[in-house]
Image 1 (tube, chains in turn purple, yellow):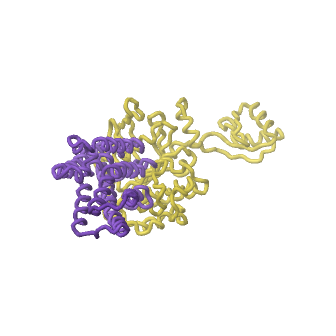
Image 2 (cartoon, chains in turn blue, green; image 1 turned 90 degrees about the vertical axis):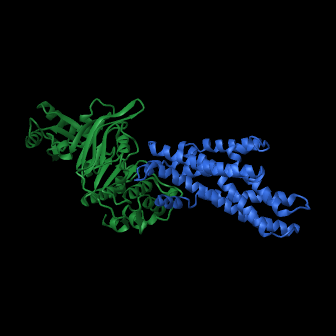
Image 3 (cartoon, chains in turn brown, red; image 1 turned 180 degrees about the horizontal axis):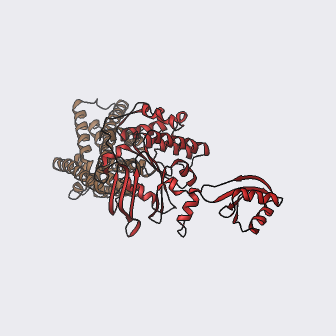
Length: 243
Length: 316
């Protein structure tokens, strides 16, 4: 399976999924950067507010859209040129192919999380310098990094689901539409403390918005759910004809 | 062709002896209720160039997909290099394939496409440019595939089929989009593979080209096998000679007046020689004032003639 991962690494060169991995977090931080710059000087603890604002926008809007488009564009590399027939004629089991694609999506989304952390620190330092807010402290760094790591685990269920959809259906539009629909429903449910935390597209939001219990729910359900859906996908793609 | 072995190092693996490269036994292939191949049996001997010929919709591509494990046979057994491909996919490591249109990544260069497939087959690609050179794409290795012409894409598809240094190469319409020079080079490449003991299973609608490369051929029509065997056994020598005479109309009149079957074949006349021998025809025409410019005795029946004869009545 390592050989398949190496092949995927080459396929990512100059590809849309690779660009999206950078553009997604960059756009998120850029939007929040300008929003913050347009606000009046506030007498607040800057870094927690800044991080929370970046995280909420990321978890609620940017991340679900990014995952849906990433998954669809990763499989579009095969759907677009019908390279499935060449991949299907390889000496690899069908579930290897699904698992590798899912792992690549996990890796790309993980890279986006890392870039989000990096970009938000840089942008935060610029804002803090311009507005003369307090300096970045070690505690704020640790909290932000641990929260984003937890959000990453919480989003794995949606990652696996979107990858299953994208591999299952040739259409680019269908899985992206479902992802955007999930994001829209999440926006409607985010203020509902009873239902919101249980909605899969809001599991990353659980980590930062609903308190410790729901944060744990988001991490466990997101991580375990991602594993279960990946296993279901592997099972299905080991049986499917590759026509 | 010798260069191909220098281009890649395959991971060591026992090659295994095979009686036949491909063996289909009573295979039925269906899409839902629609049966495209019914109780089809075929044995492709090792080391041959095997032509697989049939009209559009005859079931050629479905058969190839089944051989490669892309489609499951509803009934029957499919063995590739002595392995049941539905149970043991590892044998596909020794099989290179091209199903038209070629499966390529247009955002990558030709060399990167080769590298992707080298990883797929767990082959150490020491120099993708070397393999590209064998298909005449050495100059375009760094060019993105989206900038390739149709013929270049086809050549790259063939190169990708050769990546695993296969014992069996399965090519579905490999000459689509190739210009005459490309077809001639492709022919040399296939014959080179054959000389190295590789088996080439070649599906094409270019019957003339298949007949120039194949040692054996299977004709398929409407999901049934019409003929399977050697090319020599298929194309018989027929009692026809081709002549070029002037004036042509007079030659036709003279020959028909003595009971010869004559048909016009382009600039030439095809004359049945079962009653009159070629030398008698020559003397007859000379005695009636017809100038004979050329006479070709004992014409070989083309694969196209045979194909049309055997599938007469089937929609082509």
